[in-house]
Image (cartoon, rainbow, N blue to C red; front, side, top):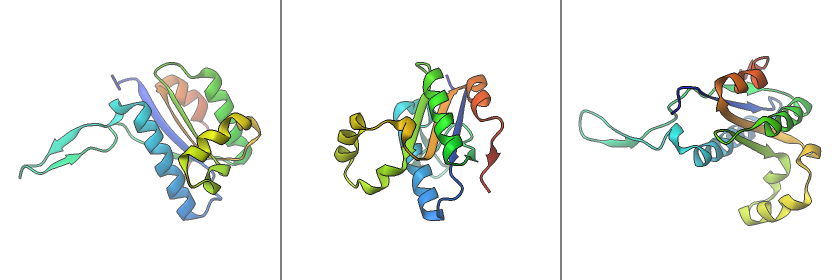
Length: 139
């Protein structure tokens, strides 16, 4: 089922390291919740120790500035299909420490006007490449 899927996480490289890590982690949880086929497996080593697996696909972390992230998010949302995931991390979410507050604030916001710190995209390989093919890896 994952043969034609591709993952990309895009973040603003100007974020401090801790916020970068937090953004990637939060986006990754959102992607995994939407598409559990990307992990949700247990593996066993030769000694019988069971672990939960990480992603079954590579997860490149790419970079883009604020404006490019916003445009990318809007383009991805316009083209997302049923087997896709678009997981933005808007900057305002950092000030909200209770998920219910984040959820409650969403209807009063326009994500097209918000600063976006990161974005996760999963979908058909061709679609994800068309959105992210020109972006550089985060280094």
